[in-house]
Amino acid sequence: MKPSPIQLLQLTFKRVYVEVDQAHAPSEPPNPFTTVFVFDGVSITTEVGLAEVDMDHERGPMYLVSLQVLIDNKCETDEPDRKFSPYRIDIEAAGIVQLAKGADKIGSPHDLVTVNGASLLWSAVHEQLLTLTSRMPAGPVMLPTVHFHDLKQPTIETVEPAAPQTKARKAAKIK
Image 1 (cartoon, rainbow, N blue to C red):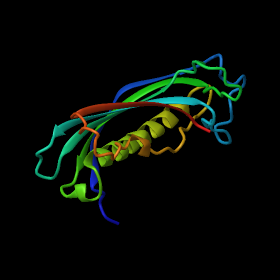
Image 2: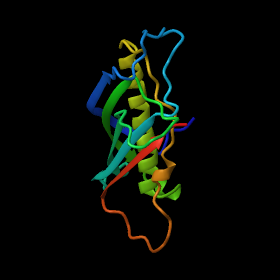
Image 3: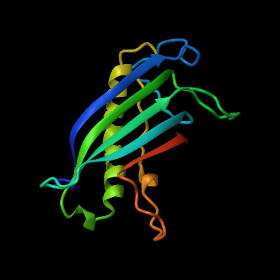
């Protein structure tokens, strides 16, 4: 085992909002020992932000990564297989991520920090949501395991370098 070249130094929750969506909650409380809601078919919107914090730190550059996870149960299109969450959820987390010196040999620093930083924050949101909903009337919910590789920057030479602060927003229907 070796330490990762990407280290999460600090994690904070900027917003944690979870409420029962009465229109989509189960009629009977589920048994928390046998039933955990999964998000197959539910629309989950995420927004990932990245900002430089200290690019000259002695151990390597530091970045602020933010992640917002939104499940609002709004139906924007006619989708016959659309599934809804028993909760409306809006959680935003932020973390200070440090990239070890020399890690740019592995890949683009922007890509390394964005993809891995978002994954680290997703794990924290995943756990926080499961903990909160385990005591709520619609029962526990567990976000799916995901990856953020689609946030990598294109490698076309004609693309201009990214600004120091970027945001990416995506909506995904988990199938």
